[in-house]
Image 1 (cartoon, rainbow, N blue to C red):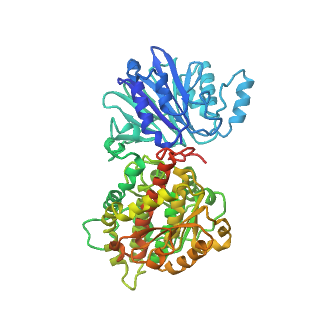
Image 2 (cartoon, helix red, strand yellow; image 1 turned 30 degrees about the horizontal axis):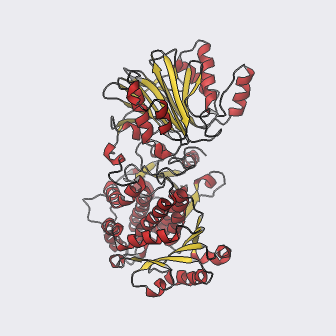
Length: 620
């Protein structure tokens, strides 16, 4: 979850480090720091809070350190120890300086041993202990590379490190032992390391995604990948990323999140083009690929995910069961991996992760593969761990998403799941009424309808409702059927970026306890489009209204009966009326994203980098 950047080459290292860490701010952090060589000595500047505090320590003039051409940088998301300057990275032990991402599970034992040998850790972190291990090994006579290798023999847990030593000033050593790490050769000479690809795109699109147990050994003249276990050199091919540095800019929007909300139509089009055989005139023409073949033989599907991806999976369950007539279960990856699931013959486990690095989801995929269960992945990042470890993967093409709260990656995940449902339904002969081909014709129109919707009166109504309801003490988001998981996602968005207590519920569950919370200080967002659940949802809404809550309703423009029950009303445009009800999540979701965004703006929160959150959750 922490951000790492390392550099050695001919460019001003401090500039590369700070610019790279800015690209990683979306991951979430509470302290930051850089370390760089000055002649043969390493200088460290670190501070709690934002990266600007580190820049102030550099006297506000990064260019004043242009003579430094080797260094490492870090943004820390606190796990062990408070978010203080003392606990911030980089950490120095004698001549050794390290940055670390992940968790050292046996840190208590290591700390006791190190103190017993006369060491004196200065921080509360588990990370600093790795520097002591490397220092001790080098004091025994090992070089930096071998000392790092030897140190990992004492460490339990998934983590990645990048290490410098004043004894070997022309070397940067990075290790991936769980948490992601990528490397790239600088076209101007040298090497850049980072915890994901975004800091590298400014310099090159040819990126090496290190695999588990890989060491990157970088000097100003070369980059070698060697095995952590054996020390032998490995061959790793570079992947070419189609993301551009321009896509990482706000492009005139006040926040990345708002920009990414408006990028959703393009993300859907790109995902369609990336997964379908566009030369085919057949409905749901999934391009030939290993994932399609694996799906063909599936008898049951188990979807595992975390956070927003779990909500996407819940919508996917509705679609897969309706259109493909195949048994589907949905589990939180963090729960699935610690219970004893019963999987039938022909089961396929499909892990969904925006980053492809979600620790719990990856753990499930690894467990299933060890049991001989076939695995699939859905991710937005080519070269990610999920894309390499699952038996096959389907890529969303949402492009880089900087805002911590998922927006366009979520709707792109929805699209992949619906494509799989339609494809499987036709392959399995599960469409005797011939409903799937018309569904596909409607689906390909959705990006255009969404583009219009984002600029429509409905969005203006959502902004007005946000202004009126921002002071509410809490929110309930309710819906049924396809709208139920969307309600869950809407509540999550509000919690993530506005720090307001919000709950998503299936509307029929309100009377089973939650309605006790409803009073005049609460706001209820009800999703009740004209679908098979509309009448039941309105009946549940009546119960809420009788208890004084303020109501924001979302429904068909001509649903006057529903509108009359609501204090605030968002009409869905008439253009969406012909759509099958199962496609409505593609419109309702961006609406709720914008609603949460507008409330967060009024609360004055950091929309793109909400407190305590990280974009990629790479630890348990």
